[in-house]
Amino acid sequence: MISYDLVTFGAPLQERERPDLVPKGREAVVRVRRSGVCHSDLHIRAGFFDLGEDGTLDMAARGMKLPMAMGHEVLGEVVACGPEVADPPLGQTMLVHPWIGCGACRACDEDRENDCAKMNALGIVRDGGYASHILVPDVKFLVDVQGLDLSEVTPYACSGVTVYNALKKVLPIRAEETLAVIGAGGLGLNAIAIARALEVPRIVSVDVDAAKLAAAREMGADAIVNSATAPDALAALQQAAEGKLFAVIDTVGRPETARLSAMALVKTGRYCVVGLYGGTLKLPMPWFPQKALSMMGSYVGSANDLRDLIALVRTGKIKPLPVEERPLAEANAALDDLEAGRVTGRIILTTD
Image (tube, rainbow, N blue to C red; front, top):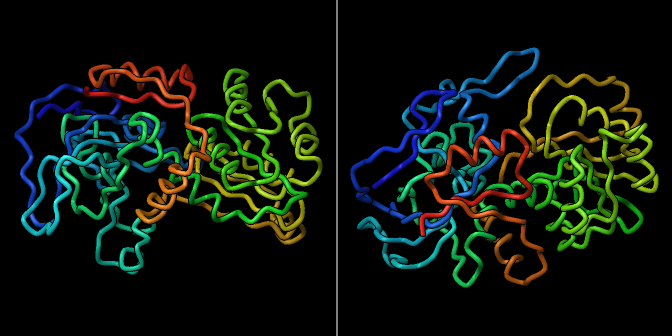
């Protein structure tokens, strides 16, 4: 098998030949056909996440050992299964749920593997999908997507399930209220599309890039705010929300977006952070009791969340994310373009 591995943090990926994968127990080998390029991959490639005044979270300290094949939005065909799989789905097209837990904690017992404190996530702790093949630790993490567009469905394994889980935490939103989605990258555009499918009454997209905001309109945003060009971003957001901003999903996650959200929300509003840009949160503490605000984080989603999301995709109610296909061999260029802000939607690496 061939993989494009991170061998040194901060350096380009290297093409490497590895021994073929042999599944054991309930494992499955999937021949990769699609692999999405996620913004988190930039942090992983760099080797750290920015914790602001508290320094950095090093990927090595989180359990990542190099060399490692990145890539956690993975779709492909099952080509082999371990001997404990009673009914192996050989030849079937599957989306891989990458957020694998330890299998032994309360979160894992409750099928909340995304909340596991000792995650074994694919593309982060275990080898991911920037490769010709991937080893999935249990067939229960395979989600049937046969009949769906391969490139369009791939990002739901991360950007889709992440914002779907976040939306569950901020809903319901009443008819007179508004949801704002901060950021119009892959996460933000999927959040808009899924929120529209869930019949959220009014959606505002906030970004600093005019082209991405135009894409947000196409995905179903009722209003857009360019926080870089607006004379007063707070006033512009409140106006776009018609003075009734009840919930914010922040797909960026930096101090400026947190402050804007907390200031713009109405009393009892909900602020949910999923973005990992980084920095230190500084807000006046009295705002939280005085406005009765709820602030929460949401990290990806569970395998059951992904199955529920794919069921919703099959209804045709979710507008698919704009995707651009590139061959797997262009993984380094794809990461560089994403880091430079030259990507709208998602780059999907292909092995066809």
